Amino acid sequence: MSNIRLPIAVCAAVAEVLKGSHDTLNALFIAAGAPGPPPDLAHHSKWKTWLQRAGNDPEVDSLAVLGNLIEEFMDLPLLPSDGGLAEFLGTEHDPLAEYNKRRERLTQILEEHGFRYFRGGRVIPIGENSPELNTEITVPTSEGQKPSTIEDLLKIIIRGLPRAMHPLIHRRKNSQVLSFESEYDIQDLLHSQLRPWIADIRPEEFTPSYAGSSTRMDFLLPAHKLVIETKRIRDKHHASKIGDELIIDIEHYRRHPESAHLWCVIYDPQLFISNPKGLATDLEGHRSTPDGSIQVKVFIFGGSA
Image 1 (cartoon, helix red, strand yellow):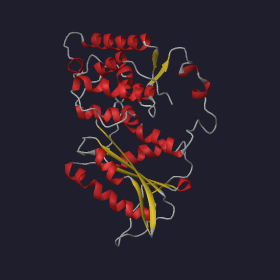
Image 2 (image 1 turned 60 degrees about the horizontal axis):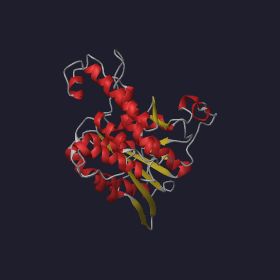
Image 3 (image 1 turned 120 degrees about the horizontal axis):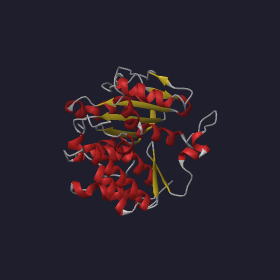
């Protein structure tokens, strides 16, 4: 794990290029893997402080967080025809030149402090082999380069869903844009991400009856006794009821003989959930009764992909 301290100048330079509301950037930092909760600070200092904290946390891959945060800015140049470009950069005078200036400044500060950015959200210390030249990364074996555990793999895939959505939402001119307006859309994306890694994925497996009804699991991974349940928050009313929905799901899944673990993946694009940390805390943990038990983990992400 690259728990490398991030210099304050690097953190400040990154904060300069991150634009958006508190809710939007909170979602971006959480999706990038920054440790929560968000610092209770004013907008101008909050983001550099949060990133610096990630660099001081031995449990966090600080370079991965850094790369995830700046990937969109570095890899997706804004077009002169983009109506929001001037607003994004805070200028009406040659906004494309201003974007290039800011990108060059960020690149320079990274390199002055011993880091180099590579396309795809990868930041490595200068002097190490670049990802393009590292055959262990770019030339996979027939089985692929798997993380060491199924938990590590799923965390990478689930936390990377916003990044996986981005090129599908922001497609080339005259290409059909893909939207993620339903739970089925989220399920299809997640399924496509899982398939190269896991051989036996069973969608829509029925659960034993609870309170006179049964339900279908979104995905069952029987080799790992693990269920993945996806939710998409539709509106504020749905956000207020999502905890109750999942409690009922947990009771169903707890009775299935092949489900020892439940991972709940909640997509909240409009950030209607007022206290995502509290919701996750309430639901997570070991649930056990005489007719079954299950270990629950919750992932909540949102904002613009």
